[in-house]
Image 1 (cartoon, helix red, strand yellow):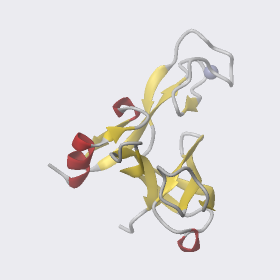
Image 2 (spheres, protein in one colour):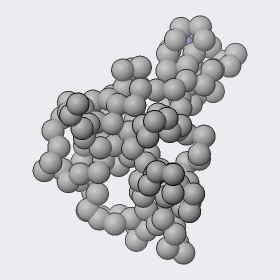
Image 3 (cartoon, protein in one colour):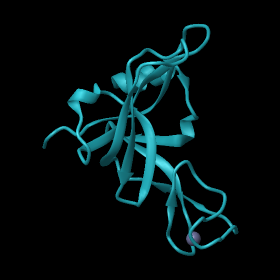
Image 4 (cartoon, helix red, strand yellow):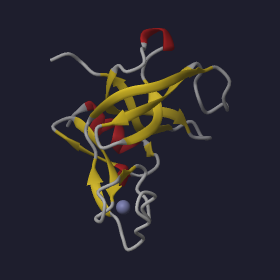
Length: 142
Ligand SMILES: [Zn+2]
């Protein structure tokens, strides 16, 4: 069992374990895809904001990596979050922009940098349990 799988077994999951899949230790977000026009969304959408289709979206696995569009270091947050932390928007090849925590300080990051999806602790619940979710990390070379 990998470290990620061990953490995922003991921690609370946000938003839900359906939000991603882990394959070969890589994390893939599960969004939606419009069967009429092909537009992707994350989190999954109930209707398409591109073509107006509301007859049902299909589940779609996004790429494991994208490009950091923008980011900001957060210094003031509720007690359950450890500050400072970095929030970033990541653009995926499927033309979806996803907001999430980034596992670096702002000084270590650059706009347009390649990042990959990982799992990690994003905060703690009121009773101190770790809460796991997807995060972003600089893509390792090779
Ligand atoms: Zn559509």
